[in-house]
Length: 175
Image 1 (cartoon, one colour):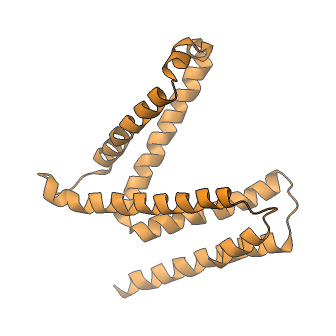
Image 2 (cartoon, one colour):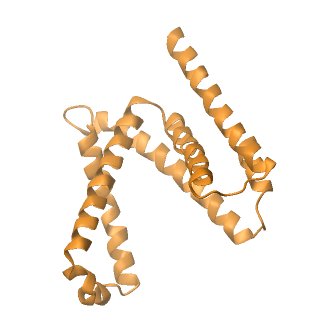
Image 3 (cartoon, rainbow, N blue to C red):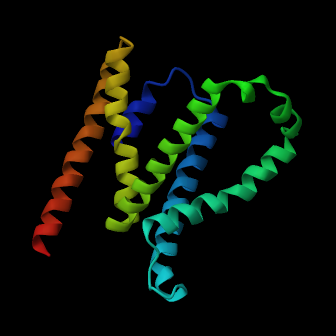
């Protein structure tokens, strides 16, 4: 929380719509993680084998997203555009879209595996902590000048990750 506040202080401007979207994103991501974990736990009563493996969860997760995709495509009248776009005739497009699909499948599979091995809280925290190395990489690769406040927010995020990892190690060694 301290890291987020320190990072927010450096924002160039405050816009309620942007912060509303961010709060909604946090709420929906947490809801998704908790719901997914609940589904994994309740699969014991719903299946003959007593559990769903990662592949079944990936399939279920992706199939459940299809109706929303169809609604959006139809709602924004994208069917005509999809049928007429010249991109569909380019081999490079198909190569990139296939690679994107394979990588998405790999991310989905590893997310399901990680969620099965840990708790929804750990899953969410690791998901937020992975932004710290990305921030540092972005600063270094794009030669972005940073303020002291920005550096402090990144440092607090890194410290939070270290403290969390130590607490989890201590918890695991006691059990």
